[in-house]
Image (cartoon, rainbow, N blue to C red):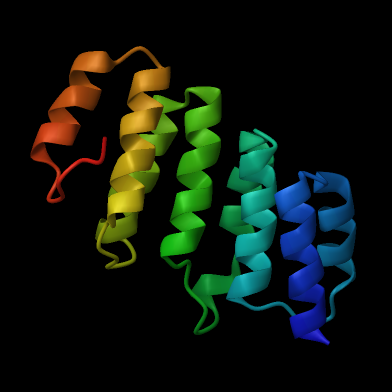
Length: 138
C-alpha cells in the first residue's frame, strides 16, 4: 500500500539510496505528496540537482490537488545548496511564494543562507540573516 511504500522511500532517502528509491517510486501504482517529497529528499541528500529538478517538474500539481508543499521546497533548496546553484535556489525560493502561495519558513531561509554561504556570497548570506523575519539560530 502507499503508506508502506512511502515508509520505504523515506528510509531510502535517509540512507542515500537514490537508485533503490527511484525503482520503488517508479513501481508505485499511486503516489501522493509524501512519495514525491521522499524522492526529492533522496535526490537532495545525494546532491543530484538535475534529478531533483526533473522530479519537481514532473510533480502532478497542475492536474491534481497535490501541489508542492513546504517540504518539497526544502528538498529542492538543499539540493541547490549542495551544488552551489544560486540562481536555481533563488528561483525556487521566489517561486514558493509567487507561484504556490507558500510562506517561507525558518528552514527555507536557513537553506538559502547555507546556499549563499557555500557559493561564496557571504555578504548576501549575512544580509539575508539580518533581514529574514526570524531570529537566526547560533
